[in-house]
Length: 284
Image (cartoon, rainbow, N blue to C red; front, side, top):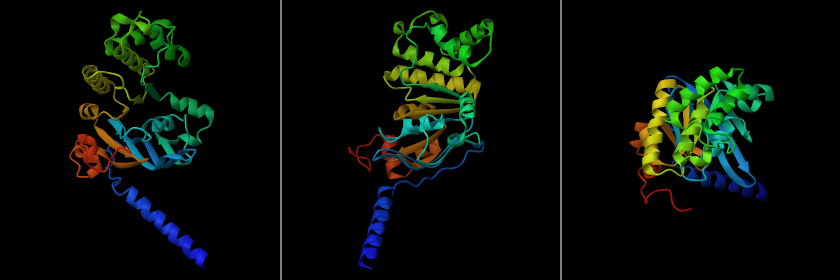
C-alpha cells in the first residue's frame, strides 16, 4: 500500500512539474480560412535522453508565409526534417496535404517530396557546377523536360532572384547572399507547392537579410503556396511573416496571425518578440 501511495505521489509531482514547465504554453491559435498545408499532431521526438519535440501540435496555413521562431536548440530544424520524411516521430503524426508522412511507402514518399522546395542555410550548392547547372540539377534529375525548356525555366528563376547575369559563375565566386539567392532559385524550379527555408538569414548582414526577406515576399506574391521559414531573427519575422508559431521546449507557446502575436500579452511571447532580457526565458 505504501509503495502504491509513493508511486501516486511521484506521478502527481511529475504532472505538477510539467504543468509548471509549460505554464506559458497556451497553444492558442486560430486556423487559417484556407486550411493547413502541414499539421503536426502530438509529435514527440527524442535523441537519446534529449527530448526535442514534446507533444508538438502545430498547423502551417496554405498559401501564407509562416515562420517558426523560438530560442536556439528548441527543435525548429527538426520540424523541417519531419515534414519531408527525413525523420519520423517517436509518437504522433505529421500530415502534409492530407497525407500522413510517416505512413507513406517509400515510392509515395518520394513523390510527396516533389511538393517541396528547400533552401538550406548555406544554399547547399554543388561546388563543381556553375550556377546554371546547379539550378538546372533538379529539373534534369526529377523531370523529363528537354534542355530548351530547362534553359527557359532556369533563366526565369535566376531573373526572379536577381542573378540573371551570374549563370556561368562558380559557387566559390559568389557572396554568401548570392549563394542564398541561388539556392532559392533552385528550390523553385520544380514549382513546389511548399517551400521550406532553414534559417535563410544565417550569416547575412542586416541589409542583405532585409533584401532576402523582400525577395521571399515578392516571389511568394507571384507564385503562392505554403512558405515555411525557420528562424530566430525577430526583424525577419516582422518583415515577412503572415503567420507565426512560437516554439519553446518542444511545444507551441502560441501561434496565429503575425500581428496578433506581436501584440500578445503572453509573457514569453512578449519577451521573445521584443528581445527583452527580463522574462521567462533565461540563459539556461
